[in-house]
Image 1 (cartoon, rainbow, N blue to C red):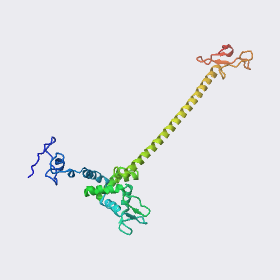
Image 2 (cartoon, helix red, strand yellow):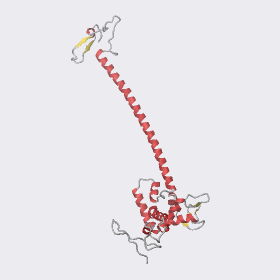
Image 3 (cartoon, helix red, strand yellow):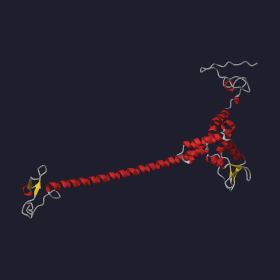
Image 4 (cartoon, rainbow, N blue to C red):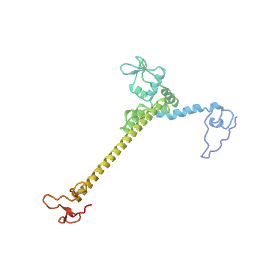
Length: 282
C-alpha cells in the first residue's frame, strides 16, 4: 500500500483536497511539483490547461447558440452555398440555413463572404471559436430565447448607436483574432481622421479670431479718429484743428461784419468770445 504523503496546512483555511490522478493517489498539481513518484509532466499539461481556461473564459462571451455553432461547423467541413434567391443552403439543393445566422457570423468575422462560386467557408477566427466552444461544452452556448433577450437588452440600451455598433455588441468578434485587429485598425484610422479634422477646425477658428480682432482694431482706430476730429471741430470751429486764416495771418471776418462767436467748454452757452480775441497758437 502506498503511503499517503502529508498535505501541509494552508494559512488561509483548511487544506485543499487534491484532484484525482490517473497515475497516483494524489492530485497532479501537488505530486508533480512536490517531487513525489508516480506522476510525470504529462499529468500536468500547461497547453491543455490554457486551452480549457480560454474556452471557459471566451466561449460564453461569444453569445452563440447551437445553431451558430452548427453553421460554422458545416462551413468548416463542407461549406455553405448561397443560392441566387438570396438564401443559404448546406449544399446545392440541400437544407436551408437561416440568413440571419450567416449575416451575424459574417459581420463578426467568423464566416467569409461568398466567393465566385457562391460558397461560404469558415475563417480562421470561426474555426478557433468553434474549437473553443467544443472545448467549453454545451454550457457555454445560449438558447435561442436567451440570445434574443440579450439582443433586445443591448438594442434598448444603445438606441442611439449605429447598426454596426449594435451588431458588434450583440455578436462580438473573437478577442485577439484577425477581425479584432481589422476593427482596431479601422478605429485607429477613424481617430486619426477625426484628429486631422479637429486640427483643421482649430486652425480655421484661430484665423477667424485673428481676422475679427484685426477688423475690430481697425474699426476702433477709425472711431477714435472720428471722435478726435469731432472734438477739434467743437473746440476750434473748423476741421483739422486750425482756424481759417487770411493771407496776412488774421482771422477771416464773416460777411455780416461781426466776428464769429465761439462757446467755451465749461461756461454757460450765453458766454462766448470772438475768434479775434483767441491766441494765435490756439
